[in-house]
Image (tube, helix red, strand yellow):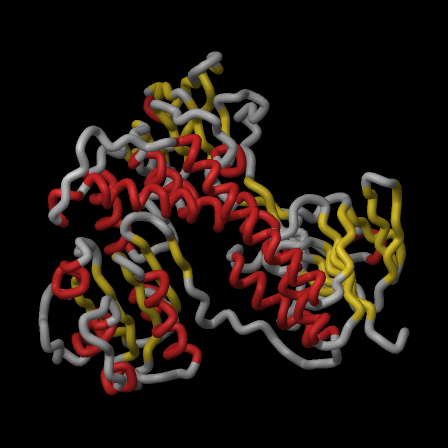
Length: 464
C-alpha cells in the first residue's frame, strides 16, 4: 500500500462526491470516476432542478394571491415555461460548478467516463480519449439509480416520460397522465397543475403517498382534489391503447381509457449496478440488482464499499451522503456503522410534507404504547401572516417513557422543522425536553411545541 491511501470513488452523485471530499480531508489520495455530470441525479436531474421549478411555481402562486396580501398586478399573470426551465438549469449549473470547485480545492482527480472494475485494485475508465486505468487501495461504489421502467410502456415514444424526461420538456403539456402517486408523481403534479396542465393521477395503492401517515395522505389528497387534480386510487394501468403523435391513450382497470398529451411514469427507481465489473470481485447483488452491504457499507469483496441508492437502502440523497461519510471512515481504519434511525423524508409540494421515525401504527407494531399530539397550522400566527395555514404537525411518543418516536407534518417550511424531531429521536429525548425548550414567537416552529404539549394534553393554544 502506498504511503497515502488511494481511494477511488465510482460515481459522483451525493454519495460519491461527499465521500470523495471527506476522503481527501482525511488525507487520502482520491480519484472520482463519473460518467455523466458531477452531482449525479439529485443535483442535475432530481432534487435541485425540481426544487428550482417549485420555487418558480411558488412565486407564481403567491402572485396570483395578491388580493389577499393587499396588492394588485394588472393583467393576467402567465407563467413563462421556457424561462422557468432556463432558471432550473442555471441553478443546477451553479451547484455543479460548486462541487467541481471543491474537487479542485481538495486536489481530487476527476476522471470523466464509464468506470468498470477489471481486477482487484483496478478500475478501467472508458473516456472520450480512450481507456484509462485507475488503481485503488479502497473502492467506494456510488453509482446510484435511474427511473424504473415498465416493460409494457414504450419509452422511445415522445409521449412517454420518466422523471428525467419531464425536466427536459420544451413546451408545457395541456394534459398529463401521471402513473404513480408517490413522492415524484406528487411533486410533478403540483408543479404542472399550477402551470395550468390538467392532471390525472393513477395509483394502484389505496392512498396517495403510500409510505406516509394515513391521516396526512388523506388531507393532502383533499388539497390536490380542490386544485382540480383527478386522482384514481386502487387502479392499475393495464396497457397502452394508442401512441399518437401528440397524445397517448392508456387502458386502466374497469375498461376505461384515459387520453393525455403526455404520460409521466413515476413508479420508483432501479440500481445502476450492471456493467461495472461486480462479477470480477464476486460482489453480490439481490434479485433486483442492488449491491449487498453490511452496516459498515462493506460488500462481499475486501476493501470495496457501496453507498447510496445502488445498495438498496433508503433511496434519498441525504442517506447517500451519510453513507459516503461512514464508508470513508471505515476505509481509513475506522469502525463506524450507518445510523438510519432518524432519516427525514421530505416532499416538496405545496404545502410541504415531512416525516421521520415511526408513525402511530408502526409504533404499535414495534411494541410501543404510542400517544400522539397534534396542532393545526391554522392556529399559528406566523402561518396566518404568511398565508400558509394549511396542514398540521403531529408528534408520536411512547406513553410509558415519554420518548419521542416520530413525527409527520404538512405545511409551510416543515421540511426544515422536521430536524428538531430528528435530533430528539437521535438523542432519545423525551417530549418534555421539547416542551422545556423555548420556541421563538411568531414562528412555524411553535407548532412543534404545541404538538408536544398536546401529547401531554396541555397545549396552551388548543387548536385541532
